[in-house]
Amino acid sequence: MEIKTVCQDIYDSVIKSAEKTQAPVAYITLNISKDFPFTNEQIIQEFDKFKWNTGLSTADLIVEIDASLESNSYKVIEIQQFKDDE
Image (cartoon, rainbow, N blue to C red; front, side):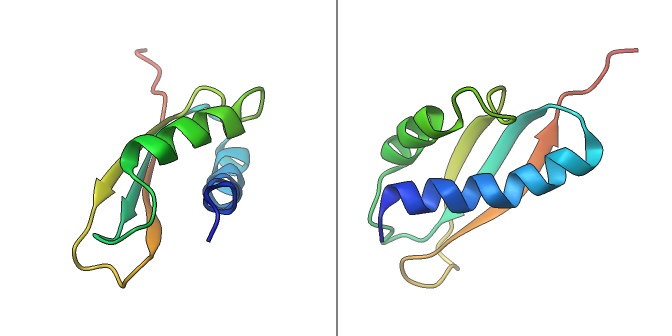
């Protein structure tokens, strides 16, 4: 497994939802297994590079460990969009 592949998977799954609503994404919550081969910081840093100048440029990635996930797995849990204060 390569970290760029993980970032591509995150991007692909989130961009579909973002395009449907046409609202900018604020936060993406990603759960990873306890034994995931990359740290939270590595995933966030690589995703920040990956999303640069794309439809997800405004999105911040939140990575949390989920002990219930199968070994070496990850899952996008939540996509939060910016909300209009009005």
